[in-house]
Image 1: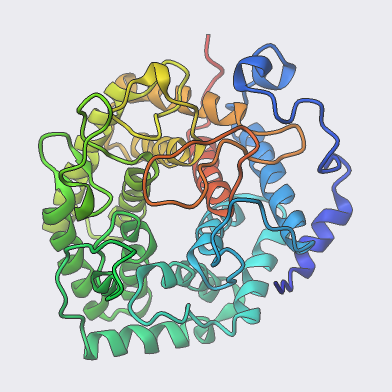
Image 2 (image 1 turned 180 degrees about the vertical axis):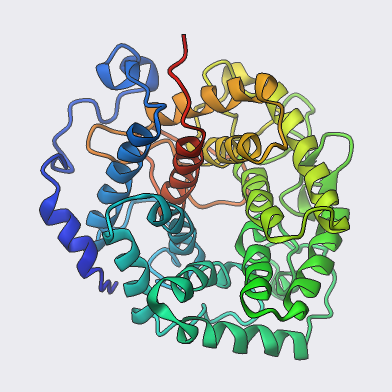
Length: 403
């Protein structure tokens, strides 16, 4: 695996507070064992304090990446510098770079783009290989110039010239014929990976064709995967008929987290009052209302959202995306503060308990397409990206400590 994070290496050298990766007595302990610690008791709410914690988590991640460390239980594409696992981290880094006084985060984003030669992932249509484009769009406004989005425009222009013509039915990954619907946005994760890239490119370039494509595809997959009774998205069509141990529908926490966070990133890119924006705001508010009712007492959401909360472990990536969406919705005025601020606070408290003393972010379910087991030591790059989104959105709220 190759990294050119010279800026990240500089961060690692300057971090006096970054403890050795193996030298923390608290690592491996369950959340319940940490509740009495000073770290768990002193939950940051003020903007400066929240950003300080976000920087600690980002610095740990960048330092370990610069050293070439890959977390265990990863997928084969984790090392791909243009892929979705790292691309989701860079979406979080761009929000941190907008708020932090530390210019190293800006330098890391620009360095990644230069190292990638501003190219997307190799899969032509696949949404996962488009998410890194969100970092390039940020870079284009922050020192990268037009060159940062040149290959992105070329790829999307080619997709517009040869749009996919497959359906949205999702085959099993074991099907030797492949999953051809992934030429479109036929799984929930895709709604974080691709649409914001298309909408933002349209806004940056003034070319309405990119937004028109994204509007059409977003509407198609929402009509297909959004359960209008539960106000949640199925991960893909394979889950329509599946049921959990108590007969409940199976809605994957991180899968719906990708959507909820994706909506928070897409909605501001559309004009107020735009019919598609109004529809997205409606879905966002419906999801928020449902998520409020199923948040666990400990602040997390279950890996399988409708499962028995008493029997489900903490899971931080879905929780981070939901907390991000709640905090963003409060700041944007889409969510009622008395109703939803407690939800965001509970989610944020849960997330701070997932941060190890050295800045490692735990309880991240490994790469999957469904609810699975997770532990305190589990971490992934995309989970850190989700945490950074939640932290920066909570920093924007600048809340007072809870009584």
